[in-house]
Image (tube, rainbow, N blue to C red; front, side):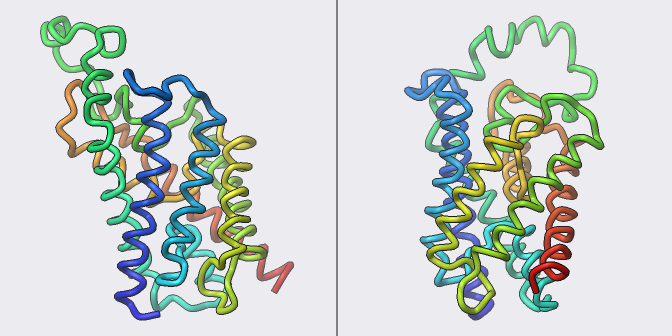
Length: 263
């Protein structure tokens, strides 16, 4: 695989991943969506299908890592770091593109949601009160469409949850998901990993929303901060390091376990 194939493949694959994954969250939580209140099962299976679709679409082009944690795990397994920056750059850019496409697809629903007084309160009263203390540190009412956040804010628990979930993901990729070259996901691996993502969401997604992918969280969070959404609130940057650091630590731990137990 050339660097251009890797870069383009990761952009396309991660954009599709976020479009479909962020799209199911938007469908479930936003006002005037036909799928509103469909629930956690819809979100977890939607993300699983998003992974499967994106991997099948771009597996032959880039190996379909679509996740810096997966890229890091494979690099540690093989001790091959040459293409890591290309993979991660493509993943981050693709995640931002995918998040912007979710906004376009649900433009009317975002507007309906963020202008509903039951959701955002009375803007006139907020103007009198002044900006909320903390500003960008607070999670706005649609941030969950773009990135993850904890139900209970406990730094060490939140970090541990992301580490544990990513260890499971990376071990599944390294033991079951890789193609013959060992550099990316194969056809059977795409299906296995998709179901693993569903399983992680069902079992471990409750505390933090299971980012298990730094690009999936950071790229859309940047887009949330940049988009002209009315009453969107903050992007919760004080939490943003956890869904980046946790999956990267989890990837290193998972790859270490693989090299000790399976290699």
